[in-house]
Structures are given as structure tokens and as C-alpha cells.
Amino acid sequence: MYAELILALVKIALLVGGLMTAAAYFVLLERWIAAWVQDRRGPNRVGMPLTKIKLFGLGQPLADGLKFIFKEEYTPAHVNRGLFVLAPIMILASALAIFAVIPFGSAIPGQPIRGWLGDDSDRPIELIAAPGVNVALLYVFALSSIAVYGVILGGWASNNKYSFLGMLRSSAQLIAYEIPLGLGILGVVAASGSLELDRIINVQADTGVWFALAQPLGFVVFMIAAFAEAARLPFDLPEAEQELIGGYHTEYSGMKLLLFLVAEFLHMITASFLIVILFLGGWHFWGITGAGEAEVTWLSAILRIVVLMAKIFLVILFFMLVRWSWPRFRFDQLMNLAWKVMLPLGMVNLTAVAITVELEHTMGLSRWLSVAIGWTVCIAGWLAVAWAAPLAGDNRPRRELRPYGIDSQV
Amino acid sequence: MQPNDPAIRWAEEPKLGLAGKMYLPLFFQGLTTTARHLVSPKVTVSYPDQEPQIDNPLIYRGVHRLNKDEQGRVKCVACFLCATACPAHCIDIVGVESPWPDREKYPESFTIDELRCIYCGMCEEACPVDAIELTSLYNLTGRSREEMVFDKEKLLSVYDETKDKEPMRSLPIAAPRPE
Ligand code: SF4
Ligand code: SF4
Picture 1 (tube, each protein chain N blue to C red):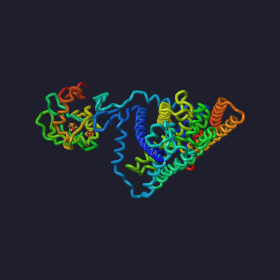
Picture 2: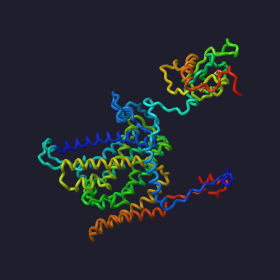
Picture 3: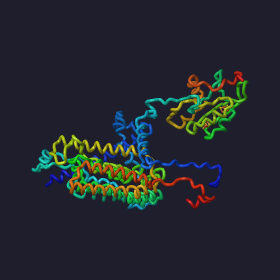
Picture 4: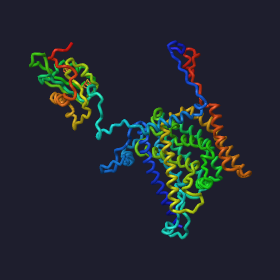
């Protein structure tokens, strides 16, 4: 009876501790990559506290955290105090709560641990804080939408036009990107027949075909939408430093700013968890981790955790490299991309998936044929978008303008 | 200026091909550029561990020095041109009648507030006798504000310190000029 409770508390402690540490170290990684891409060296001085050991700057997150804690926390006089305080709490709380249903491994054998806790069953211990939630995906998306409330409240409460603009952009972006995101997920849900993240991984592990391979178009759509959801470049318009001085968190300082920044990194971690779990096979890797329902041993459990973490690390690395690779989209381009490109492509993908799933059930369509269909649809859809080119605007100079006509154009 | 002004050169945006519209070239270009820089040699100088390489010490604008002529006297003739040119007003000169026959005045005291100085090099440009010069000493530190106000002795000692590495940019005034 108490065993489950204790296990849940331990898992929560592990998750929160692990996530906060991970977020801190991803900040360091981001700074390193930013530096390396710009031919600099990045933070490499701060090592172990009170010693002279440098450790490639691995002590930097600790120093950053301390700095934030001891900074003056300044609340401008013109803000709406209640909402101003509520916003960072809300954004961090929802970013953390999402992880309740996200598996951070497969399962570990229950034997000795349950014994210590006075539980006589030896069911394996699933590595999810709240195992068996059968609407896990809905929960994730409900909460990730609430996180945007934090942004909106922060921007509104700050009572500052830059924050306000960032918040407006964030709301518009949210509406534009929830739909392709949902369409990308629907394909996975249709193919796996479940909203439970564990089940989705198991289906991929059993068939050995990751959904990124079976539905490449859905993968691309979901990936792009996930970047926009996490507000990473090239879609970081809500906080575009060059235009908005940081956007919705312009007026924040000290711990409150820290909460915002950590939440931002948590969003990125969530996005990579979802990309990996939904499309890249979760903890599955051919020939290493075995099928979904295989017997849980310590070896396979640890291998699965390692594979999952490695994949997530690689996806986050990709997030960080993308940041330095492409320029930011203009806002109208962003909207065009969402409504004119990703929405139709998501629909096309969903239709294709629905048809192949139906054919697999009724006519026994072979798996490889459905993968081939997926790729054909992806290439055809992409070509169609390129041919129609809804994003390629006409930027040619307008020579026929009469004098002073330019003003009316603007 | 009006849109039909002949002086305006209108640039045409290049037309995108099918591949361009598919975003593929941009995608790979961006990633390869990033990846190339990720591994390329770094330009950062890890300063205290590694001294920066100053390409040409003769044109570097670091700590000032007051040059001496071949008899070891200060070259300055207290003309105040440097103090006038200085945009930061950090040069303070007290000029008195010179004990030497070759000039009318010389500086009894000459101080530069190195903290106010913006290292623009105007003083060096202004000096008619090349008495004041900026050296390549870049790591200037001090424990108090007073310590950072360099007086004549200090400025002359900077000259002694750097004269071998950085020769004076002109000949001594007493010597006949080549032209
Ligand atoms: S370098 Fe510029 S600011 Fe400094 S003393 Fe000379 S003229 Fe003044
Ligand atoms: S310009 Fe040269 S000569 Fe004149 S006061 Fe300054 S340092 Fe002396």
C-alpha cells in the first residue's frame, strides 16, 4: 500500500532533481555550442568551488544559479503585482508537471526494491511518475498549452510594450502551431492505437519500425511544430532579442527570471522527449533493447535508459545547432508556414496513415509497403508545397510606384 | 529621392528553383556552416594563461610614455597641443621656462589620468616633437585611482621600459632631419 506511494515520491524526486540539473547543464551546453559555432571557447573557467580545479567549466551552472539567487529582485512599479508573480510560477509548474506522464526509461525489475518496501508482489517498477495514465498525450498537450498562459500573463502583467508584443506573438504562434502539432500526433495515435506513451514506444519496439520511418511527413510536421512550441530559433519570435529585448520576460529579474529561463529549457527537453518517444522509438534500438513485452532484466532496463537518454541528448543537440544555422522567420512567414504548409501537410499525412492502417487491418498490407506509401506521400507532399510555394513572396521592387506612393504602401 | 530616380540601382531578387523552394539547399547549407565552425580553430585568447599576440606594437594604443631625447631629457616642449587635442581632458601639464638653450619651455609636471583616458591616440597625433607616444602595454592595473594618475617620472620610466622593444617613431629633435 505505502510501497506505491513511496515509489511515486522517489520517482518525483528523481525527476525534479534530474530535470533541474539537466536544465542547468543544458544551459552550459547551449553556451558552449554558441561559443564553438562562433569560433570562441565558451565558459571554461569555473570548476569545483573553493579549489583550483577547472574541469572544463563544469561548475558554471552552479555559479549561474548562485548569481541568480543573489541578484536583486526588482519589481517595477507599473506592473500588475499578482499576475507578475504568478506568471513564472505557472510556467515552471506546468513545465514540470508535464513530466508526470513521460517515461524516462522502460521499467526496472521490482524484486529487491519492492521487498525493501514491504510489498510482496514483484511486478516491475515502471519509470514513469504516474504509470498507466491512458490519456497521457492529452495531459501533455493540455499542460503545455497552460505553459503559454505563463507567457501571456507575464507579458500582460509587465505592462510594457515589448513584453506585450512578445506575449501577442506567443499567443498567435500557439494557435498556429497547436494544430500541425496535433495532426502530427494523430498520425502516431492512429498507427499505434493508444494515447499512452508507453504503449506507443512498445508498438515501435515490437514492429521495429519507428514512426519517423513509417510517417516521415508527420515527423517533419511535428518536428517543425515542436520547434515553434518550444519557441526555439528559427521560431523564437516571442522573445526575439533583437526586436523585443527578450519579449515577455523583459521586466523580470533575479529568481523570477531564472524560473522563466529554466521553464524554457524544460520546454525544449519536453519537446525532445516527445519527438523521441513518438517518432524515434523511445528506448528502442534494433538489436540492443529487445521487444516491448520482453522480460525486464537489469541489463535491458539500463540499456533502455541509456538509449533513451542518448537519443534525447542528440535531439537537444540538434535543437541547439539549428539555433545557429538558420535565420529567424518573419512573423507573416511563420504564419504562412503554419497555415498554408504545415496544416495541409499534416492533413495529408493523417489521411495516408489512416488509409494504410485500415489496409493493414483489412487486407493485410505488408509493413514495408505501408512504409513505402509513407515515403511516397512525404516526397509528393513536399514537392507539391514547393511547386505551389505559398511562402515565396513577391519581394521584387515596385518600380512603377508614383512619387510618395511608398508611404501609402507602408 | 523618388522611386524613379536614375541614381537608384534596383537589385533583383534571385529566383528560387524547385530545390530552393523545398528548403533543402538552405537546410544543408545552414547545418554544414554550423558544423564547420563547430570544429574550426578558435580565435579566443585565454588571456591570463596565454599572452595576446599584438600584431604591430608600433601602432597599438596602450599606456602612454614620454620620450627622452639622446641626452636623457624629456622631449616635451610644453606646447599643450596634446592637452588641447585630448577629448577626455586627462592631460595636465605645468610648463615652466626651460633651463636648456634649445627650447623655451619644458614641463615641470606632466600627468595623465590613465583612467579617464580613452586611448584614442589624439595626443600622439598632436605632438609636434613626438614626445608623447602610446605603447603596446595593454595590461594596466592599479589598486587605487591615485595610482592610475601617471606623473612625469612614471611616464618617463615607461619609456625606459619600452624603448628597446618599440623604437621612437621619429628621430631626436636635435639631430638634423633626413629631408
Ligand atoms: S590617448 Fe586620447 S584620451 Fe588618452 S591622453 Fe591621449 S588624447 Fe587624451
Ligand atoms: S604635444 Fe608634445 S610637446 Fe606639446 S605638451 Fe604635449 S607632449 Fe609636450
